[in-house]
View 1 (tube, rainbow, N blue to C red):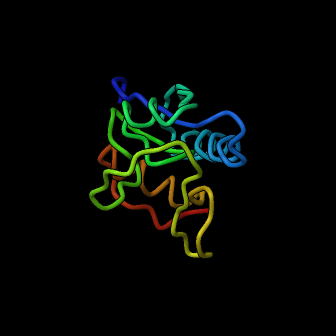
View 2: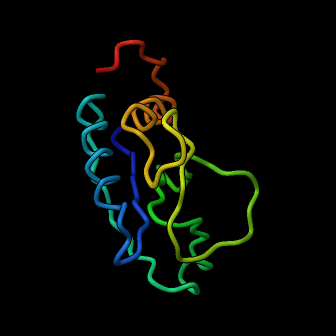
Length: 114
């Protein structure tokens, strides 16, 4: 896991990226995955096109979206929505983050979430 790179793409003024960053840090701690989160500002539509950002916040692990959407080509600066067990939200739940991180690093699913 030493080669793990996590990027959090966001835009200044996004109401959700700090909550996503907090929950991501907590999920990494709870899963005992040592990693630094690199914040990447995507403040213009041109930057969003260049990095193919589907919106803020987007979490990428080693360059791959942790929650890939269907094939898309409408990259842009804006808020991203996640389908969660509680409905649409501006961030994935901590449980979703933990499950996705476990899959990404090759750990089996956990049934022991707090």
